[in-house]
Amino acid sequence: MDGACSGVVAARIEALTFRMEMNDGTVGYWSGTRRWTLTRLCQDGHPILRQCGEIIDRFDLREVWPKRKNASQSVVDMNSIRWLLLIVLVLIGSVYGGPLDDEYAAQRRRMVRTIDADVKATSARLGEPGLEARVLAAMGSVPRHEFVPSGLRHLAYANRPLPIGYGQTISQPYIVAVMTALLDVDNQDIVLEVGTGSGYQAAVLAELVQRVYSIEIIPELAQLTQKQLRRLGYDNIETRVGDGYYGWEEHAPFDAIIVTAAASHIPPPLLRQLKPTGRMVIPVGGPFLTQQLMLVHKTAEGRVKMRQVLPVAFVPLKGKH
Ligand code: SAH
Image (cartoon, rainbow, N blue to C red):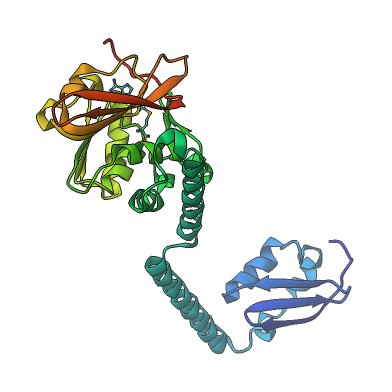
């Protein structure tokens, strides 16, 4: 035994903490809620006390814990207070959302401001003076962090596309907002989406329309996204696995169609499934070339008009067409 200390000068309870003063000037603190904790501490040779093992052996527990009943009573009281505090915090959290939710909401507001500014800066090209309030509101309410892989949540509200696995991406928020605005939907509309991906674009549209039908070609991704959309309560979105090039005949015609993967040409089945006066937004171009975001409009007489809106970069539309 190291002889550095040769006696316990004092040990007393200070609000459930033992303060050990050794006669070599060493002061140690030990928080214990049971009498045996201190006994164990002595037996195991806690680092603070190891040097003083001999002295501790002679240490009289009755001296440091003279009013055992009172002490354990105060332990109960402290525990009750801790539990009460925890319950209050959980209740406050469930009413107002946790601090993390607040942080995401703040990030989302910043994202919406950025998108709004970017749309205004590109308004001439877009042919839109700015985004309607309801599109901004939809962008401001969908929790994008729930649609990105958990490891990338810190980037969820950056104005950029992110990988979602299977070689696919969730589109940049600015592009999602622009495509949504170009569709010019209302709350009675039935919309078809080709390329469910993460489900984010579908969720934004679901805030604005009556129903969204969305098709995804990668079965594993479709399954994961379907689960997530259900968990988040989007019950006006229906998804299925398939090649969206051919549309979704059972639910056609659609008021609007959005394609979120780049096609080499506008799929004729989608044109057929678009209602007269309906709109389609689709990126067109080769996979390694600059694609053009196209706005397609079917007139009341069934004629098709289109215009190039923006150069874009989307993952390619899969399938042999
Ligand atoms: N709208 C998505 C974007 C996903 S990226 C989002 O908000 O996250 C494009 C998606 O289209 C990918 O998931 C890809 O697998 C899917 N896709 C590609 N070709 C397709 C096809 N022929 N039919 C349906 N989905 C297709």
